[in-house]
Every structure is written in C-alpha cells, then in structure tokens.
Length: 362
Image 1: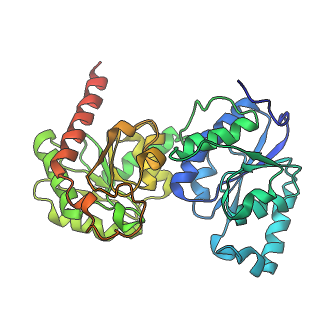
Image 2: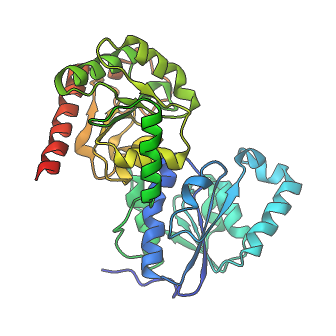
Image 3: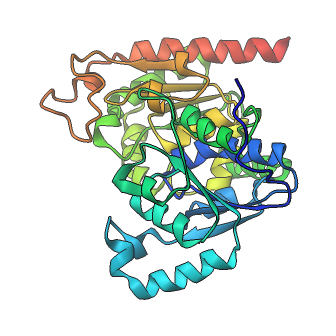
C-alpha cells in the first residue's frame, strides 16, 4: 500500500543531507532523481563533503550544493566544541529557508544540522545512530540489515512521496565522455576493450593482493587481448597501482591513479566495457553508470555494499568469519582475499567481456 506523502513539495525547498562517503553519496543520487521527478518544481539542495561537491553539483536534479568541511566538526562533540564555526554554518543553513530536510546520513552531526535549519519537516531513520533521531519531526522505519543502502534510502524518500527510483546515473555529459577519451589517448591507450581497474579500498582487508591482480590482468591480456587495462582511483592507490604494473608479465597497464577528477572518473567508467574492482567508491560509480562491474569482496557483505543491481557479479573467497565487517583481519591472515584464485576472477571477467561484445554485435 502506498504511503501518504508528508506534504505537497511542489515549489518547496528541500535540503538533502548526505555528506559522505563516496559510495553512499552515489547511492543517494537515485533519491534526488526520484524526488525531482515527482516534484519538478522542488528546489533541491544537497549538503555534501567538500571534495565530493564537484561530483554532485553538475547533476541536473540538484539545484545547488552546500559544501561541508568535515574537519570543522569532527566527532560526536565536534559541532559543540567549534561554536564559532557552528554559528557561521548555522547561518548558511538558515539562509536556505528550507521547508523540508531529508537526513540520509543519520549521525548526531547531521541530525543537529537538520534541526538547525529550522525546517518544519525533518525526516530521518527511526534507528539512526548517535541519537540523531531526536532531531527529526518524522521518523521512518526502514528495512533491517542486511539491506542495501539504496533500499534504505528509497524507504526514506517514499515517506516524502518520491516514486520509483528510475534513474541512478551521475548525469555524465557527452562532452565529459569525449574528454575521458582524450585523457585515455593522452595516457597512451591505443583502443580496444576498455577495462577499468580499481585495485584498492579504504580498508586493508578489502584489498586483493597486487600480485594476484596482476595475474588476473595477464590472463585478460593473453586470452582476450586486453593489453592496456586502466588503473584508476585516488592518490592513495598510486603505490598498489605501481606494484601491479611491475608484476604484470603480459599486460601493460596504464595507471591514472590520482590523475582524474571525480567527474572525469565517472565519465571514464561510463565508457568502460568492464570495471574490475574491490569494494570501493569507484565500484559504485561504475554500477550507477550501468557499466558491467566485477567486484572482489572479502570482509564486507555485498547484500549491504555490493554493486547495486549487479550482485551476481560479485566474486569472493572463503573464510569461516565472512562477512566479518572488520577493517583489520581478525587473525585469519587475510584468508578471504589471499586464497581467492586469480583464475576465478579472470574467468568471470572474460565472461562479462564476452557478454558486452555480444550486445555490441546485435
């Protein structure tokens, strides 16, 4: 049974609070599309961490962004400790004159910000952490874990009357795709199948060994002619990308780690034939763009954080503690990643590349 919307949002001003992380921000984009589709005259502002604002601002369903410096209010008591900064930020929030706030972060800081807007309607998860639910006027019961973030966000948006999430992309333009192709050409990519590879993640337990990644890429080079896979990610992945390049015997990877903006990365992943990745932010960008995404999982649960709509493309090792959800391995010597055969991943990647090639010839 459909939920009766809280209010008619036509012509109203809404603040969507979802500052981080990269993957979660990408997961919130379908909610923005759904809200704007339901209420075309709705003015939608997005509070997002500075650095991610460049990814969100160009999306057509977002009218403006409020960049948020996370370091200004770090931790549970950060907003209360930095009173001068908080007063300044509060003025910014109130100048928005928001009618509705949708807090999709669900932490004390985001709940406090929703309250500080003075918006008469403030929506959030009934089970939000750190007591943030205390700041909401409307508390939504969302599905219990394990559940994907996309599903939980959709439940929040449904309370506001948003319809089905029919669009999830980051609104990549043709000009951005052309720029991505130019970037690849300048980096020495000579054409052929474009396989993008994100070999790292913020947790050490999520990272597939560099030598094993190199073995996968060699298999793709030898069996499918993918000689120039493109390594992507931030500056923090430069080292592992170098290790992969050095370990490859047949493949000749091109590393663009730290060399693309987020919009350039989104455009590159949009035109890729395949994304091979660990559980990472770029994984979610690729999936949002509809790119076939092969994800290597270890300690995390793909039901919660996998490439949405492509969970059948997840490959994982075996460990009796999976999913342990630990940033550091709880005494198993990274077994879930260490014992995962590169051939298992290569076979899946080859099958996905063949599916892509078959579609192009139809």
